[in-house]
Amino acid sequence: MILSDSTLRSMIEKAELSVSPLTEESIQPASIDCRLGTHFLIVEDRNMEILDLNSEILYRSIEGESITIPPHSFLLATTMEYVKLPNDLTAFVEGRSSVGRMGLFIQNAGWVDPGFEGQITLELYNANSLPIRLQAGRRICQLVFCKMDQETPNPYRGKYQGQMNTTGSRVFHDSESQKS
Image 1 (tube, rainbow, N blue to C red):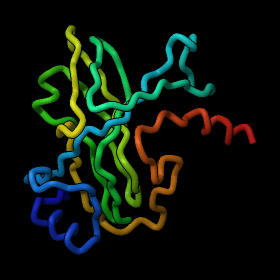
Image 2 (tube, rainbow, N blue to C red):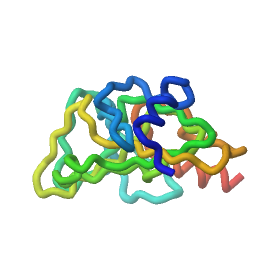
Image 3 (cartoon, rainbow, N blue to C red):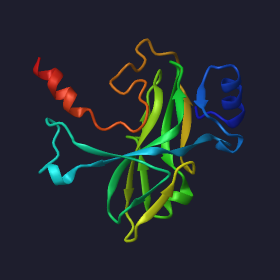
Image 4 (cartoon, rainbow, N blue to C red):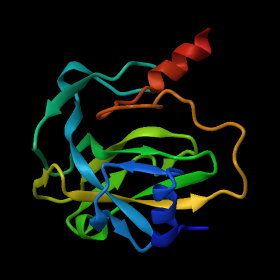
């Protein structure tokens, strides 16, 4: 079941759900908008020949109030908001329609597990033939919350728990643990 603005407000007031900092305009009828943060990561393609699941990925970190994404380019960004989900709630990350109509695709693998807390890393792709300039603090994506049928006994405690700022892929760490 997707949660309404009334339910989201009630859960936030009772501290059952945390989205911070939160503005009144961020609460939508069936979602909460998140704003673009000031930290970005770009794959260091000049220092790597190929990306694969068994090698650490090198990133260049950028801090700033704006970022320009060249045409047909990819980068990682973060939300301003720090989110903390209870063990019986999950969220989908969706791009905002007005941003998608510019040709900007937004993901975070699309899913936030119950029990997750941290800033959300977003995967941004400019599908347009023109550069897209983004400003920190602008609403860029939305979280759609779904109530689970029961609380999970195994809430998220993975490698991205508590992340602050943009966090690059840690898939390499998965292959390292499989070798042990």
